[in-house]
Image (cartoon, rainbow, N blue to C red):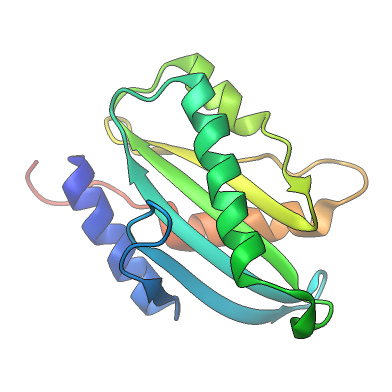
Length: 162
């Protein structure tokens, strides 16, 4: 799937699931979407999501960009919003990503500075979404939430002619 078609499909998903545009351009991310929700296992959450199209993505880029997106969450969610759990998804649309890029995204330290950022890789050629797996032990609620959000927002199938 062409990265532009993938972006269009994700934009349609974000509209269908109630994600609103925060800004057209936020700290280098174009655009950032958000939604507030009350999750049965996590409590009140505020979710921020963005899509990055970088065909030359390297493993270090994944970490750097995810850290930058964490700063967006820190800037947007503060203590005045109570015990809200901030979640961030930065998804990289990459044709045929190198395994090291997928591994860098999956091994990224999710929780830091009271934020949870999940880098996700979408393989545009195989239409495969590589997200964080749900652990068997502590902290499963946030990972389950990530699994559901990633599926509803970033998982799309090939359709029509290329």
